[in-house]
Image (cartoon, rainbow, N blue to C red; front, side, top):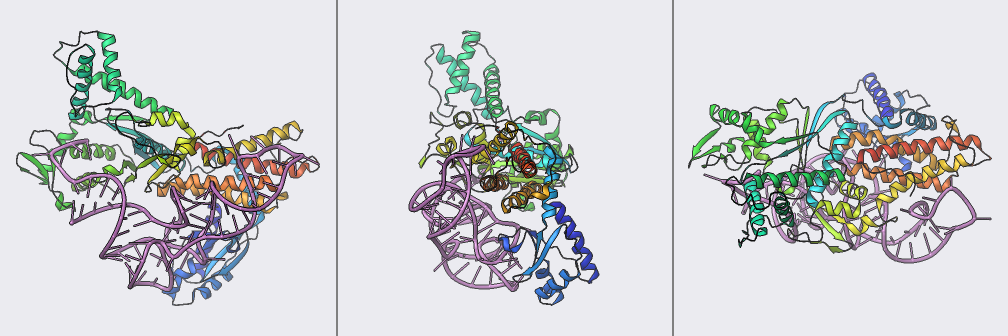
Length: 546
RNA sequence: GCUCCCUUAGCUCAAUGGAUAGAGCAGCAGCCUUCUAAGCUGUUGGUUGGAGGUUCGAAUCCUCCAGGGAGCGCCA
């Protein structure tokens, strides 16, 4: 489809020049109706105003001047208000099967690293407790978007930003300490604003096992904080690994203090008169950069607010030379990023390469029942529990199947269902079915030879299937541009539907038709490759049997 | 009070400003001596929350109103 569009674009532009029409930024569309062809162009309507002519007339003139070989396009129609509709020729479809078979696991991939370096930052939860289901959506989105960007030609690195200093972590450490002392038999009340979770007790118990009571009298309490951080990070990484997610870098906020990046930003803010002191605190003149009020960047205690390290951190991303910087946040952080962007702009940094993606919340359902996710001992408070319950494939698919800005209702009952109601199985079944066909072909002494005359494919279901194969590279590019994962899951379902229909309509292994059998086996293999490529991007298993 | 997101079929959701708003599920009616029926076919279902505006063309952009969610700290 991409090649065909590039070819059409070239021909159209030559024609525009020939007719002395102005260049206009028109679009290629995929019409909803078969009667409207395979590729549609809205060019004539867009030219109507500058040329002051009837769009259908313009379309007629362009169409008549176009010089397209009939091996690519079999028919051109002008329809509706002035759409130019192209019908793909069967020979171009047959060629597509060969292209897919030829490119295999590279089909749909833009040349590696041709777009430069991209960084995707996501999850970035501080090590104060296990990952929640909300983190799960972000983890899967971030990982899948990273894969999409990689397929779209970026050299992608995944980063996890965390803070193991500050108030939160001190409270965490003390939570473990109090639990530890309780385990030693001390009658101490557990403070209400401390971390209540069961995992705190586990960490305390481990310390008691290792050290007995020897930590009771120690002046230095950092051992509790350090133990908590180690254990919790271990747990977080385990959960992420369960979902197939591995980060390239973990960036510690503390490094920004040690390497002087924080001081450098403060220096710049003062030097450029972007900040002033009031009530003992340092205020960023953010109202000068479009915000509704000025914001504190250094508290009167001398401690920075989150904005300062965040600004310094983002400067390092820019310094590290990324061509594309993607930040993924939950909706609860919606108010924080404008401050950081304003700070970067104030310092003269180029924020154009930064894309901030905000995803909406997740609600767990068990059938029609909402699952409560309290912070105490609820059924499913952690991502680990969810992943273990419904499995990696379903977890990843369900988190990927909705637009990022849509609230996500995650139905665990549905995710567990092994039937046609569950989209994961519907798609995986298509892959398994193809593998079954190959086993059948082998046992019938008609194994796929690797070559065939694809001109024999002329059933409508075959054409529809090939047209879906053609779409894949464009789906990757569109998903990368929009930074949306549901476009891909949706495409996968379209492809599976086209395959299941083909499967019902066309017998593949037919001993009386060895030529057609080979052609159809080739089509099956091409379909299997594209499904496998899609599953690869989603990091969902492509099963050979089910 | 202010900022951001959402409101589309009974339910869950699609639709880079394009043509007759589409899928899945649920409902109804069918299809297995055939490569896996975890599949396929047909069918019911809509004033895109409401009112204006911009446009050749609006679910999509703008304004106002209603409803739901998330935020609005010298917490992150």
